[in-house]
Amino acid sequence: MLLISLLDVYTLVVFGAVITSWVQLPPDHPIANFLHTVTEPLLGPIRQVLPDMGGLDRSPMVLLLAVRLVRGALLSVATAF
Image (cartoon, rainbow, N blue to C red):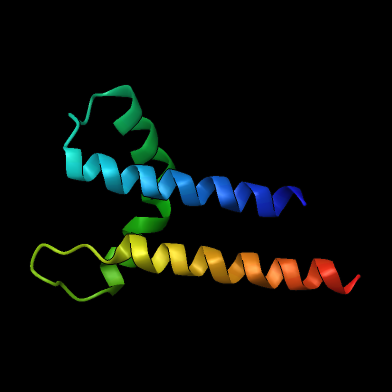
């Protein structure tokens, strides 16, 4: 199913954003810019809801969990037909 494959690719994109934050690529780097553009619309609102953990950003973990839950739900619906 195409949507499940897209969710798998988005999972890799989120992991890429996490890794680039560890490596601290400059914000004007094309890869960092792309990853920020693709992930920030979902990570930003999650960050606003989560309490501050003193430098530990848990929003990617929450986003990945949500993506996996949606993927699992879509997979169970797809196998039901």
